[in-house]
Amino acid sequence: MSHRLQREARIALQHHLQRESVFESFAPGRVNLIGEHTDYNEGFVLPCALELGTAVAMAPRTDRRIVAISASHGQVHRDDFSLDESPTPLPRGAWGNYLRGMVAAARNADEVLSGMDIAIVGNVPQGAGLSSSASLSVALGKLLQRAAGNAALPSPSSLQHVARWAQWTEHHYAGCLCGIMDQMAAAVAAPAEALLLDCRDLSIERIALPADWCVLIIDSGTRRELVAGEYNQRRRQCETAARHYGVPMLRDLQPSQLSKHRGALDEICFRRARHVVTENERVLRAAAALKAADLRAFGAALQDSHESLRLDFEVTVPAVDALAAEVNTLISRHADGRGGARMTGGGFGGCVIAVLERAAADPILTGLRQTVGQLQIFTVGLH
Ligand code: ADP
Ligand code: MG
Image (cartoon, rainbow, N blue to C red; front, side, top):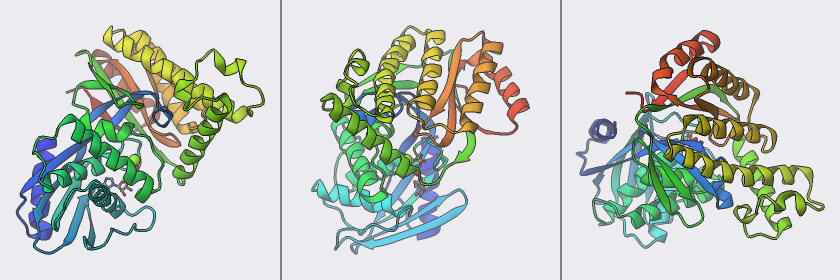
């Protein structure tokens, strides 16, 4: 997939900007198996890379302009700015903010950039919780590092830098106060593995997905506007709870302390904290189950995560709750409960993820199409 998309990016550069590509880069989208809203609390997450992603191709220019086109989903968008000033952010929602942010971040890190033509091609569905934005930003970051004269094969530390630039871009140019999971996953996750990431020190453990497991990602088709506001509010509630408990981050709060020291903490912030603390435990439980290839235990952790997101963190919507419940029913019927489903991504619509045996995928997909109709479904490990 990455090779095919890079080829498409080269062709897009020729077609739209009449330039021959000098080099390309790629970064995948990701799906989070478990560990939702834990990253900005410096906790644990377990994402894995998708086969879908974003590829970028570039040719140097002799002037000091960045000229970029994005040819995705049948449309072509353009951005164009000078390197003589710091790139100004565009209105909220403009795709060029990711490019401008990454250029600004690279320059803040003292990378020396010259003008270039860039073509972008991506096939991660946008706004579905599969992190098209991190895939775009990280692909651009790898390209900018190379354009600034760094090695063609980035080192682990340079990939961490790119992930940090991409997170900075989300904060300062896209208006989303996200954690580091999506960017680290896009920067370092490889196919057919899950990445146990400690969002405090960015240490990673790569855990292979058992060959007979697969991941289904089922798009509910629902999206809610103004999600950034809800997201940022959840972050503030977590910070309030951490201050109340006197810990630097909710990562540091022991489960036994939650109720004991609740004191005057309001109901909402208490439930937000309870989600984060129990979700961190669930990630570690799921990682152990993955290593033991115990699909029943892994599935149970996914289902518990969904309930916590629904009741304590309140980021699910009825359509996603119903879809997750439907998939869990199908898993009990067709796979004897080996596996599980939950919402994935930040919430407020988007996708449901299911992890199950490959052998059970067909009857479950058939059952899903019969009960909920035609949904867009992505898979990992099925082909
Ligand atoms: P998610 O990251 O979950 O897909 P976001 O709202 O964070 O959702 O990011 C989606 C935004 O990222 C799009 O609205 C667009 O601005 C930008 N984006 C992602 N992929 C591309 C692409 N291939 N070309 C241009 N912009 C893209
Ligand atoms: Mg995003």
